[in-house]
Length: 402
Image (cartoon, rainbow, N blue to C red):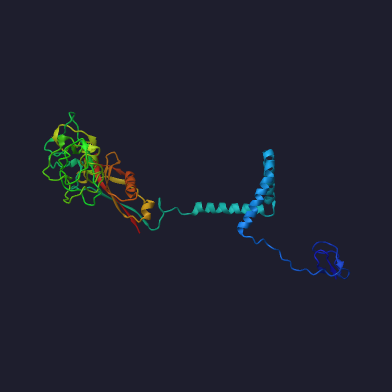
C-alpha cells in the first residue's frame, strides 16, 4: 500500500500519484505512523453585547486617532486612498463567483413583482378611507315643499308682499327703485326650535337676543333692518315670526340671535338681519337697501332674475348629472360618529350650488365634508315657462358605520 503525505489517503501499489492532489505516493512501510490528532476547543469571546460594542467603538476611535494627522495634512490624498480601497473591495466582491448572477437574478425578481402588481393588482374600491366596516355617506335630495318659507314668499308679510312686516307694497326707504335684499340668523345651540315671537326693533347696534326680552334698558339694541320694513307685531316676546314653537329657545343656530343661522339676527341666514340672506336687512341674497315705501312688493314678477322659487312653482325641476358622496373624516370614524347632515341650498339658474346653509350639523368635520360635496354637485337648472330659474333644495347626507 502507498500513502499520500498531504491528504494521508491510502492507495494501491499500482498508483504513483495521488488522484486528489497529484503528489507522489510513498510506501506505507517507509513512513512513520501519523500522530494521533486530538480535538481542540476554540474559545469564543463570552462578553455581553455592551462589552463587545464598547470594544468595537474603541477600535474605531483608535483608528480615527491614527488617521487624523494624515487626513489633516492631506485630506484629498487620504480620501482618494480610502475611496480607492472601497472601490477595489467592491470590485473584488462583484467579481467573486456567482455574485453577478445572483445580483441580476435579485433585480429581475424585484422588477417582475413590481410589474405584476401594476398589471394585475385590483384598484381600491374606496377613495379617502378604505375601511371594510364603513358604509359610504348616502345622499338624499328633498326639494322644499309648498309649506316651506322662502324669500319669494316674504318673511312675516302673509299676502301683503314679498318682504317686510308692515302693510304696503314698497320694499324699503331708499330713493332709488330696487328690491330689498339681505338676511340674518342666529341661535345658541339649543336643541329646541327657535321660539315664536316678534322681531326686535331696527337698530344699527346689534345685540344678543335673549327671549323673552323686551328690556327697556336696551332701547337701541335690535337688528339690522330697514325701518320701513319693520312693524311692532302683537307678540309679547322676541322670536322668529315664522316659528310655530312656543317653548323658550334661541334655536340651534349660533351667534346669539334667534333661529338656525349664524349671527345676531333672526332666521336661517347669516348676519344681523331677518331671514335667509346675509349681512343684514331682509329679502334674501346679499344685503341691498330696498325702496318704494313700507311693506313689500308684488311676489309674481317673473322678470326678477334674483328670485328663488319653490319646487312646486317651477315647470321642470332641476336634474342632477353629478353628485359626489362625502367621506368620513378620520376623527369621526375613530369616534364612531353617525347621523345625517342636512343642508339647505339653492340650485341657481347659472348651474351652481349657492346659499348653502347647515340646518342640522354633525361634529368632527362631517358637516364640512357634506358642504364640500354639495358644492361639487352638477345639475341642469330648473325651468319656469321655458326659462331657467333658481330653486330651493334640501340635501341630506347620511353618515353610517356598520
